[in-house]
Image 1 (cartoon, one colour):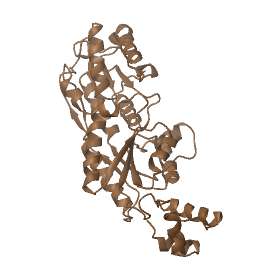
Image 2: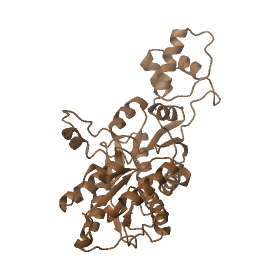
Image 3: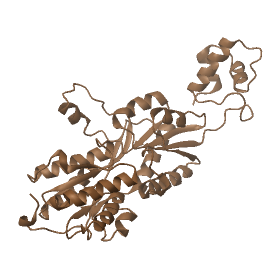
Length: 357
């Protein structure tokens, strides 16, 4: 952050004049001068109007934005809870505190980061195509989590677009593609050929999109069939989501020998709904998820899934953000953390003759 003297030199005025604005002593100052100084103070994130005894207070807050949808309860979601706990612990070690919000729009994120005492922000699940633009608008250090951009060039080519957003922001991600590819390959080696895909986004974005790509490419590698009819959208509304699962169990359950859910929460939920409609796991259909959180371990049967470590994501995000806040020189960074296949009782092998055609 620039000093009062540096701001004064930039504007061609005295440090006393800048200090007067910070302290709210603008009675004899022209409106033009005051506005010019206030714009500079805003640019360098200084507090004005003497709200902290007339001095530029120490900036010691980190904003955390979890972009999880309107009906998502962050505090009860295991992944978000573990991630938030890791962020809070790491931020505290740097002598700072967090302010949490669940923004739905770009304007929400800008307002979250606007206060003078916000050093920077960690943002989960923001649309990759909008990350670089958001970084420019906020003009404070930002580190994104699960806003992967690895497939954007391929998407642009498939859409016959000549340009796509290049890597222009910091992101702490996961090997979502590799994890999904390994999981679906495991099912295919068990003899499954018709595997449904369930997602809470249509079309899938960010990490969900990478998992969908891994699912598709694994099917292709094993010469297994795929059509858009194999993609099932799960609404945010619980009643509507359960109806989708009930309809699947009644009409399409026998068509598939396995189902991949974008998270353990949805997989666990589906197992219960399927059972109520006479579709047993894994005897009638194998079910797999992603995350390896408490839902996977408490599921009955216990869930085959892909393990990730939210606490490591949070720690790495804070460490990178603090480097940016301190002005340490380093290139824009994209870190992808590894995944691990965890096999439990929700899957079983099928003979080729048993696979649904």
